[in-house]
Amino acid sequence: MEVIFHEKQEGSLCAQHCLNALLQNQYFSAVDLAQIGRRLDDRERERMAEGGVGTNEYQRFIEEPSSNFDDSGFFSVQVISEALSVWGLDMMLYNSQNPTAVHARENPTQMSAFICNYHQHWFCIRKLGLQWFNLNSLLTGPELISDTYLALFLTQLQQEGYSIFIVTGQLPECEAEHLLRLMPASQTVKPSLLTNKTTHESRR
Image (cartoon, rainbow, N blue to C red):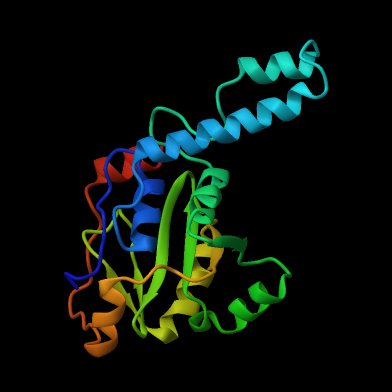
């Protein structure tokens, strides 16, 4: 399991941890994601300005804080999506009527990865080799998920209020993918949750 890239929760940087776990390397920092957030803010500001910079709507918009990121480490779904697009990846809602989503609900093991969000906490579930892993940064390490349990786990997350997104596109190659194809992982003891303090900070 040591070969799997997994970042443990720091502050409220779960979006960063989620993306890096998905891509299996330390590709994004909080600074990188904040820059993406600023670019999105600039685009929104330009669109609002088209209606006139003197309008009440525009004035309210520029006075409000960013909806894409803040100093605590929060990043919006738009920031996550934009970061994925750098790698030629996209995300779609698991419960949508898109044919890919319908297929994913029928056969989730045929997908490559899922991104889950609840109360500003982000984490990913990814296939590595022929096995699935819960790479939640609130865990002490990766959690091996059986093919049978994957569908049940996704259903459980939905019932708990999570928004689930399917990651589409070709994920970058990684060492864990190659090694786990040759030597599948086994796990006798499940990872535990990190401290309550960390959990609270990540879900504020």
